Image (cartoon, rainbow, N blue to C red; front, side):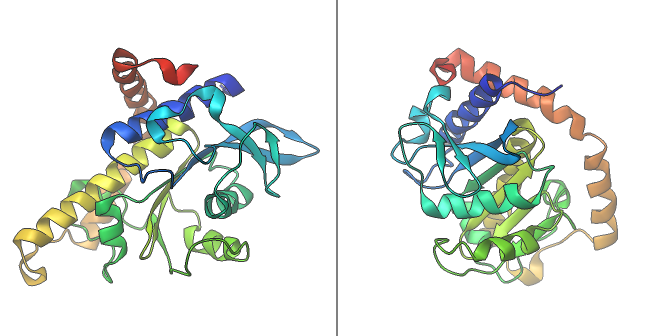
Length: 245
């Protein structure tokens, strides 16, 4: 069932608050966005955080509405241009990617700097086997021409490693994109931890054929993301419900 704008606002604000709890924030930088269900003259619009607020400050009413041309349709604030480039690129190209989450976590940036990318080290990383794209670093994403290359790099994958930069996840809902990012970041944390205790020659990776099988297993339980998301929101509600305002 299609969510209302208020529900989308509250879910996206919840994602920001939870990200702050998990240590995913980078002061005022990195962004989460969600496409609104209606359009103006056929032009998609999406919610994104206003520039200037920390993740733990964001409320549903703070989110601004932006179109694919960069016009602020609703809200009394501006956005980060680099964030607009990345998020609008995905919203332009992927009708199924209603939510986009982009992070600069320590583990994510560490793996983004590895030539090998994300390795098949464990069950969690195997979820992303053949479902993870890579995008070459081009500098701070101020150039709108980069959008086409981001689209190509993402393809039909559920996530993207922005090389020398960070991580990006997509999903049909905030619940989907948040769950993908949670486990992508955890896979990166595991890889970072393994690198501290073992050399590459001593690491036991999962064979590609088995990783294919495990990835398929995860696809069969993706419907559980909504259940997990409700649990995350109950946890947040016990701590602070102001994100709904």
